[in-house]
Length: 323
Ligand SMILES: Nc1nc2c([nH]c(=O)n2[C@H]2C[C@H](O)[C@@H](COP(=O)(O)OP(=O)(O)OP(=O)(O)O)O2)c(=O)[nH]1
Image 1 (tube, rainbow, N blue to C red):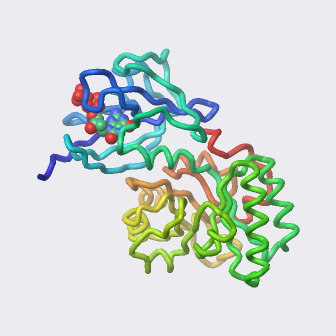
Image 2 (image 1 turned 135 degrees about the horizontal axis):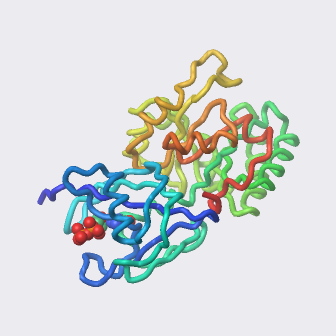
């Protein structure tokens, strides 16, 4: 049976300490007692953003003053086929109170979420665990000792997501380096992804694999790793990553970079256009540093990824605990 497509807006309300708000659905609703992000159906004549603001007035008694479109996911329930428009809301006016929910709970993104959770929301909770800043290693240029020292400094400053991208190192040194990165990042509770080599990722106990575009486009199935992401340069590639059910994508280059000095950047306007309406978070890449975080997030990016920009300077806690 084909079900009618229903648009729903939902808010990830973020507190200054990085926790987000969930509400427990009241009795007399479908999925009563399940936890959800506050929100509801988009009514005729409303945009998803307008619906979100109305729902948050009705459900929580707050007036939204800042919202950013984030992910869009579809899910087919027995009762409806929903298209969920998620927004990040980090500023509002008014005292928050439970007007329709049975309970409200502020949840840490790196801790357990209350249960039962609405079935469509699993990937959303996972996306919220993805740190905002990815550091991409370049030990082949920096030297292994210098890269590990830069990694330690960056972990100290709050980095929690690292991609090991070392095609130029010989296999033995690459594996030794990757093990060392996993050991250090794991000690801080962060995530490590290995570029283009799921077997190496498994051997060194990394959390997943990062696919270059050429590997992404040859795949018909998601590699069997807990975290899988990919580099993309065009909408068709992002859509392929979405079809495979990947956990995130990188999109760039945003600006000309030292590694690709001749290539023009796509700029923030094109980034927003290409990255919008996808089911997984997209990080901006290319000529960026942690100081570009706000600009990136206002353009719809989940965060940013950087090679030079991740190791050159200090950045302040861009892990999942920070909004
Ligand atoms: N609000 C919300 N709805 C979600 C989430 N995840 C998810 O699958 N949904 C689904 C469940 C429902 O099928 C639909 C929302 O419908 P709803 O009945 O709560 O909408 P509403 O507040 O406009 O309620 P109503 O007065 O029309 O009954 O979206 C979520 O995190 N938040």
